[in-house]
Length: 294
Image (cartoon, rainbow, N blue to C red; front, side, top):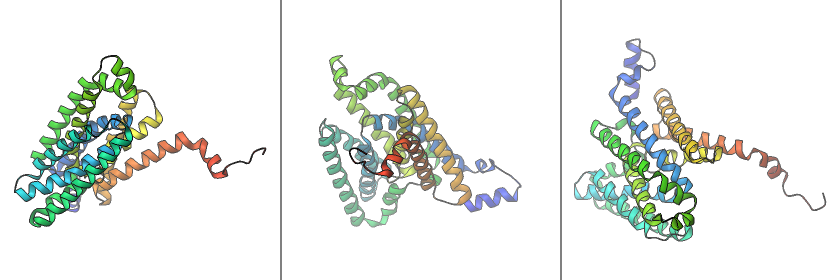
C-alpha cells in the first residue's frame, strides 16, 4: 500500500507532504497525533507514580479481551475495552505498596495472556484480529477507528485536566495529600481508569508490545531533563509528537513498520536523555571501584 502510494505521488510529480493526499496516511497521522498527545500526558503521571508495569500490563490485557470478543463473534474493540477496564479496577485493589501492586499486576498479566491464548486456540478463525492487537496497525486505521481514538483521547485529556491538581499532589506526596483531605485512593482509581481507556485506543494503533514507546519513553526522557511538572508535561507531549511524526515519515520512506520506527525514535530520545544526565558517572563506572587510600 505504501509503495503504491509513493508510486502514485511520483507519477504526478508531487513531493513532501504529498503523501498526506492519501487517506491512509492522513488517518495514520491523525490517530498517531491523538495517541501521542493523550497517551504521553497520561504516561507522564505513569512514570511519576512508578506504574510503568501496570501500563504495560493493561496494554497486553487487551489481547485477551480482543480474542474473547472474537470467540463470541462481537467487535474485538468491545472486548478490549471490557478487559482493560476490568483489569484496571482489579489492579487498584491489588495493594497500595509498590511490591504488592507489582505482584498483583504480574498475576493479572499472566492470567489474561493465558486466557488470550486459550481463546485463540478455541476459535482460530478470527485469531488475526486478536493477534493484530499485539502489534497494532497504524496504516490500517479506518474512519470509525479514528473517530473513536479522537473521541476517547479528548475525553481522557479533559478528565486529566480536571484531575490534574489532586493527581499531581497525590503522585508527589501521597501522605501530605491524605492529610489535606484529598481522596488518594479514589484519585488512584480514576487515574487507572483513564490509563485503561487510553490503552484501549492506543493498542490497536501502535500495538500492545510497543505501547511503551508512547506511554513511557517520552515521559522518562522528559523527567530526566526536568523535575518541574508543568514543563516536564509539556516536554513529554512535545517529544511524543516528534517521535510519532518522525517515525511515521521514516516508516513511509524507508518501508519499515510504523510502530517499530516510533519505538526506535522513542528509545533513541530516552538514551540521549540518560546519557546527558548520567555522563558524569560513566568515567567512574568504567574505571571500576577505587581502593581505599588511592
